[in-house]
Image 1: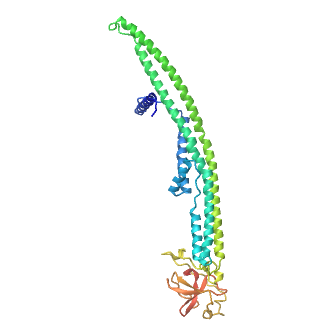
Image 2 (image 1 turned 90 degrees about the vertical axis):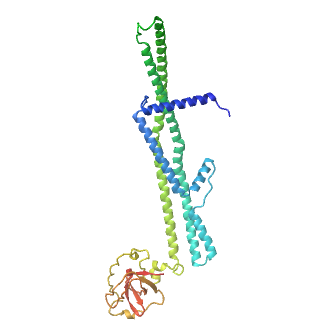
Length: 402
């Protein structure tokens, strides 16, 4: 291996000197040049920007791609400067599975045709997600990555150079201080009783040497100060550019929010279209449509199994107002009401109910009864039958079963 031994030895010496200098600064045994307050504030602001930008970038990656293996794969493709292959979204995969299942079950069956419809809309949702991921990666992730891998590396490099210039400046200051102390000591008056004439010559020579050393140290200090000031100015200009970075990231953030809003709006529209298609089908294909479209069966929808009325400990609803329509008038008795040929269904009683008069049917919680409605009947009431007993029952006390 070909390497420069002198350079290696020099670098090792610089490293050792820096370690000693840092240690002395920590112990308060060496002078340390402090940066001006404005530059210190810029450095603190830049560090804060870098740390939070990195956290936002990483979490956005997790949001857009929750699979860590896929993120690692994309990372290697980026480092190798190769195009990331297109990946099927989960919604698209679900839609494909649904459509494949419909082929097995029979596309002409109610379940098969519904699978085809839902699968198509799942694929549309997947396509919208793919477009959102692509736009977000370009408009939001890429600018953040460019800052972390480009601008911040440049700033870090210049900050390291500034720190080296500061250490060099402190070394020059310490050297000048040491030379001045030695010069002052050599210029001190000798003791005439203890000193021989020969030492006067040596003392004068040493004083001249230290004076020359002081001049050299002062020159090195001026050079080190100039280099430190120049590097501090370069670093300051780069750190002030963080404000422009904030402006750029703000614009990217707006674009990310717009893309996210467009994506969710598109998903909402797809789901509304899907619900319309499902609700437009007939009751035979969708049995639960009985509770959605009461006019097709003549029975009003009761509370769903997940409604608050079905939760444990829930209090029964208030008694609905007693209607005064043709069904309850004296001209029509409840015993004369006949069940329709179609449109009857079972209902589960949610709460105990005491009949207010002979036209109503008392109920016990958890029992099953048959219910139906007749034309002109109040939507808050149904006709209930239990064996040979018949009477009006409030809808809010029932859970209609499929």
